[in-house]
Structures are given as C-alpha cells and as structure tokens.
Length: 150
Image 1 (tube, rainbow, N blue to C red):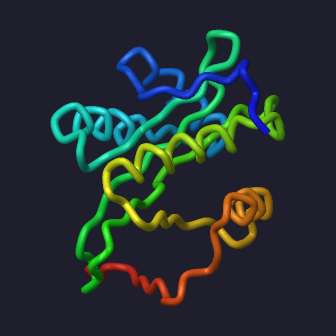
Image 2 (cartoon, rainbow, N blue to C red; image 1 turned 180 degrees about the horizontal axis):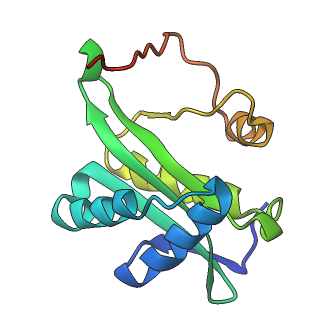
C-alpha cells in the first residue's frame, strides 16, 4: 500500500536534529555522536552508507540508516546492515516504515547490494514483527559477542 502523503528522500544536514530527537524519544538516550559521525561519513563516502528520511506534512516522520559491507566474514555478497531505523510513534501503522524499506531496498539494489541485514532485541516484539513483515528471516549463522576484558 502506498501513501502519497509520505515523501522519502536522502537525509540532509537539516534533518539531523529531528532524527536525533526521534531516536532519543524511542531509546531514552541521545546518540548524537553516532548520528553526527554517520552524517559526516556519508558526506565523504556516500558509496558506503545509505540514510533516508520519511516526511509527512513537511515534518520528519521516520528514518533508516545502513552501512554497506563487502567480503566480511569470508562472504562474497555485497550486503547492507541497517543500524538505525525509527518512525514517529504517533504515526506507526501508517506506512512510513514500509515506505522507508521500499526506498532503501531500491537504493541498495542500485548500488549492487544483494542482501540486507539487521539486528533486533528479540523481546522487542514490535520491531521483530516489522522486520518479519518486511521480508526478513533469521540468518543462517550465529552472532557471537563478548565483553572486552580489562
């Protein structure tokens, strides 16, 4: 389903404060440094990043940010990893996330990306449902982590 009132476009510097505010509203903390660094890297190395925003009524209603990988962990596919995605909670279920994902996929396909990856807290049922509805499935490999010892 398409909603003509949603406009998806590449991020510009004027969007950063609204993206930071939306992310803070959703996460309860500021990731200003992450978003500012990401925008700076996007400006100097656009072929390694994708960042789109969705607008409705002239205001930022959501965004998605991804970085591109090639050859990580012995793979050969050019892949993108979504590392930030958000929609205005008051507008959830109105097509913003679908519009962002469709535009992201089109942008990545044009860059030769054949796979999109992301992570979600398994207890965040809303995010897991969104990714499932967007065609994501469990990956055929394990993600391992451990703290760095002092």
